[in-house]
Image 1 (cartoon, helix red, strand yellow):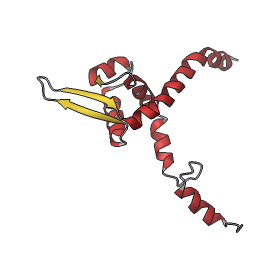
Image 2 (image 1 turned 90 degrees about the horizontal axis):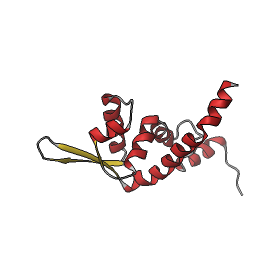
Image 3 (image 1 turned 180 degrees about the vertical axis):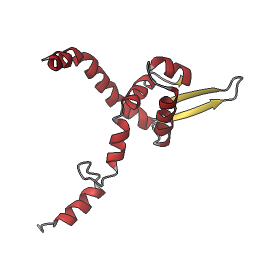
Length: 127
């Protein structure tokens, strides 16, 4: 078995998307999905399509600008679809794609874990 030099190892890891390497493109995705608003939007949309106003009410504290930016970035990444229905006024709804649904399962678990263990975390912080 031939040994590989450091450059060859980096090249192979880059092809395999190793997030531990600085130049790995998967880091951009990790940055995106580690955002609290992204996690909460994915959790909210796990129950099915929602209109913008429903999302805004569900996500207490999110600004209009942040919600719009988050939805656009998730749509750009193929995690959700935006459907415009020509009514008066125009109806816009958002729904997770299959790719988004696969990520929803993970984010829902993260949300559940955070809600379940918050008392323990707060107790540790106060010590």
